[in-house]
Length: 350
Image 1: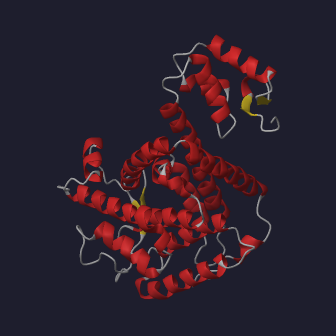
Image 2: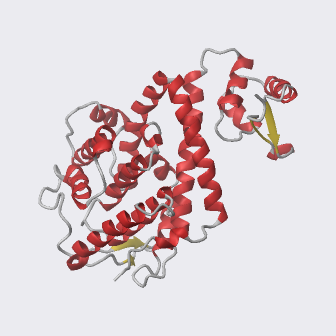
Image 3: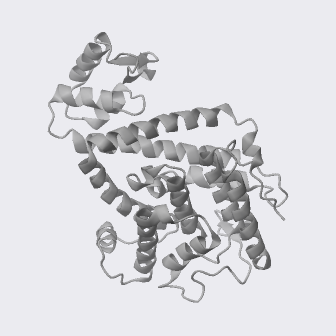
């Protein structure tokens, strides 16, 4: 049996994880400052994020329909096909989190509620219930042959393992030496290795991630689709999941690859927030003002090429003139040289 114990998070954490955590903490504070100034912009992002989350989380599992139908379903349209019913169920579960997260906490009941919500219309007998028969995580080779990639916890042991998982989570959450942000991917990895349901484990794991981010004070998932980022970079996600689940049953697995992937996805969410914010906020500004606003508003260091991609209608010469002017005025600072140069707001100047 796997031993659920997150005390290792109190030990030395690799420097790249600590660095990412510090960057994300800074980005979070900048996001909160922006929300106070641009409430209408964030409301637009919120509406877009729901659609992208519903689409992305289901697409990962091959559950798809047209973009128009997804928008209609999110708006309240009645689902027609089997896939649309699954999509509608995820929308309902996600809305539950977004609207009541302050009253929700992680528990077996909540996890089963998520599963029941996404599966009720398509699989009522199993919706909200742990598996009664064993399941396997399969993969297919180029020749079409199947192989078992991972054997989850057996059906007879699921109840006990889920209880131990939840208890380990609460014990770790009460330990001030364990970073709550790093606890999230560890819990999710263990949940996926247990694989407590016959179907829907991946989607439930993403709902759990959204809830745990809220609980940890990270509401970025309200405005940028975390699920959409996983779908966009799912090859890296599944690679990290596979590496971190190796020797899981023997308690010899390494959580670090999955933690790093989680932090990278969260970082990309903040980067996407910056890009979306720029697109919405700067449509009517003058060319030089748009470039300056991009540089001052960027929550991550940005290159000249990044700026050009955001404003393809503005010439390279204009961008370079604004960069030179802002560097001279010390509004921004330069990181690196030549093609690798990045620019960021100079917070040292008041």
